[in-house]
Amino acid sequence: MAKRLENKVCIVTGTGGSIGRAAARRFAQEGAIVVGCDTNVSAGQQTVDLVTADGGRMISLHPADLSIQADCLKLIELAIREYGRIDVLFNNAAMAYFNWIEDISVEEWHQNTRTEVDLVFFLTQAAWPHLKKSHGTIVNTASLTGHRVFKTLGGLAHATAKMGIVGMTKQLAMEGREHGIRANSVSPGVIETKQTEEQLKDKEWADYMLGKSILGRFGKPDEVANVALFLASEESSFVTGVDIIVDGGMAIW
Ligand SMILES: NC(=O)c1ccc[n+]([C@@H]2O[C@H](COP(=O)([O-])OP(=O)(O)OC[C@H]3O[C@@H](n4cnc5c(N)ncnc54)[C@H](O)[C@@H]3O)[C@@H](O)[C@H]2O)c1
Image 1 (cartoon, protein in one colour):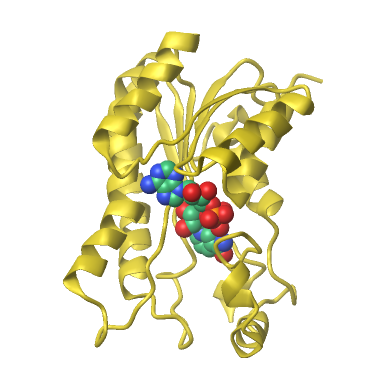
Image 2 (cartoon, rainbow, N blue to C red):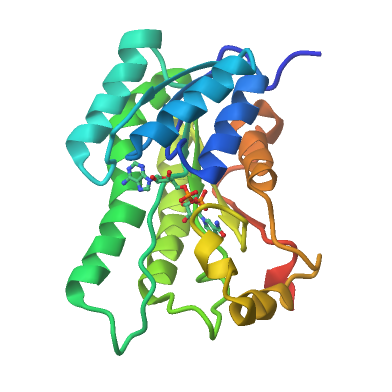
């Protein structure tokens, strides 16, 4: 059976992290040539080693801080220098800053925008000419936060940023239509990752969130990566401008 991303050059960001690593491994298993990146050098390299050990193909730029436009340009240059094309852009990397309206500083607000929104804009703009050539696919990462809000989560900046990503994705789908570019997003609920590890140790917090999961558990990084894989592949050829919530049912009650 043909692999779902055979020989597709796929940029996956934040490959040192949990969902990014899972996506790098799943995409490579499906025949992709993965171009990863992370601010974290050792975690970024570990993912390259894991993918290579699995028999997959991957290179990575680390450190790369995508909230700096010059680093986004470097990542695109790397992909083009090595492989001459970009077929898939999975904007997974982000760093959230949680706080409440009464406590958040202006600096924290802007920091969250830089690390959750600006990086998606910078990298997508740099990749755009290459996606036009390949009639490529964009998968962005939004969040359940914003679709739903939680009394235990100071998600003011995070909800604003991630709903911004949902809006940006629709706009990209519209602008991309003339070039055969599809753009969609994935919205994870609570996933057991490095980013939620500390928070999930707070039993009261974890129990409250668990009570909201229809499936009675939190998600695994692979369960988000599999949806990103579907959106990245030709299996979703008639899907554009949508956001798929991957949350074990938290959004429906
Ligand atoms: N874990 C969840 O419950 C959850 C829920 C909703 C949305 N998300 C989203 O999923 C995505 C992945 O999150 P995760 O849970 O795997 O987190 P993670 O912390 O395990 O991984 C994120 C990775 O991105 C990297 N990164 C962050 N900012 C970067 C930057 N500016 N430049 C380059 N690399 C950068 C980090 O170093 C890290 O390795 C994020 O967009 C996050 O907002 C996660």
